[in-house]
Image (cartoon, rainbow, N blue to C red; front, top):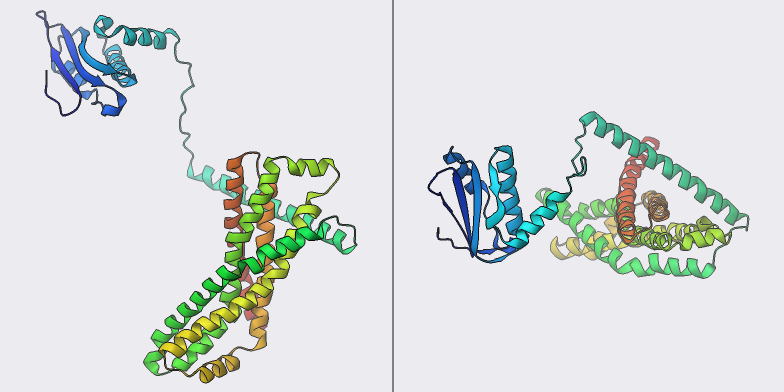
Length: 381
């Protein structure tokens, strides 16, 4: 028997006629033992072309499970293709019964899963169809929300005011800690990036211009929107998705209550109202973060820094950021509510809906920001 560092052992012997190969098993043959490859048996068979029969000797096996069955089955498959007979008498009785049971019913054709290979053109086509369907879904959902909003203006929409107040609390004041942290850090980063270049020319004072304009026009609205996409948009999708999975939305429809009015509209209005306020708050926190770097590390006096900021950042720059935040807020709320309403009936579908809501919102934020920046540049704001 060949020595082995594992608990299993395997060896070979040839009876006197040299037409039969006996495979000797010993030790423990279990899956946990990381059993060897059948290549060692195949190599032994190929090394002697006179072999016509394979036998087994298993009296020294201490323990076995499906690992031994898999090993023997692979040897039998090779012997079948090589027209070599297999003598199973030496195998444990339990193994013989299981092999007989496994071979009693032939494998059904097509039962095995095969990976379908798709061409590049097919993948492009499916991706294009998905983009078209997602765009159509977004337009359809926006239309339904618009109709619900018009009914609210006419005083015919049905939703609870307490729900809206609670939603405002969740997406407004409760979001201030994370908005504060991220906005201050963004302001600090902007100040450091500008300081490296401006310090070479002795123009550190213009750090105030860089941070102020950057936060007011772009970063304040952008960072607040991304935070809300990850925090509130995903929460909207998870809440509505859970209700969809529990058939609570079906119950509302059965009672004649529109889910768009009762569930979606309060969330849309709440985020639409809070986003401009969060944007202004993020602008101020970002400017404060830049001031910490400018005053604390660049030897700029507090009065000079804030005087420079006041001269550089006019109200129209804040107006640009606030307008963008309104657009971003609507897009985040639309993405979260739409993915939640499209959710399936399982727990995994709720997770997928929340993830999809974040991805959809961030893509929509980036695309809309690019378009708005180009538009404001054209009209000279």
